[in-house]
Length: 203
Image (cartoon, rainbow, N blue to C red):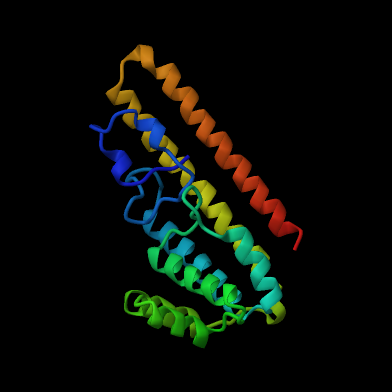
């Protein structure tokens, strides 16, 4: 349902064929869509950071279940901030290796794969929060659900931007076909959102 920066190129053919369910990053978010992008960015990154903190301190069993639900892919990436995505992938690697994803092991994973320098400031903020996560990971599914919700909400900004691009770049006879395509992307994104929310609610 959402778009990337390259999708905004009006010279690209079949523009709506390239829509996917990957989330917009802060650098790709279309201007003029939200009332206060700075506030939205602050709130969104705050939720993502709290989710990653809780994921690192949760019991390994709970962390693995949430990691499975939130795992990123070609058409699913709920993270607004690229550094948070990198940290999440490092957490996944630690979990996949059979270890608990505590901050020391996650930091070591990032260092050993040459990614620590890019995300060091964000990692430090996450592992030294002013207010820590709840004991036992009780807040983890709720924080994960909010990350999913934020991804889904951002998708509508991408959808609006794509609709505007199409309106200005195709003939009136082509509008209905593009509208149908965009509607299909929205419906797939909604199905994914509902599935992940349901999976998290069962934890």
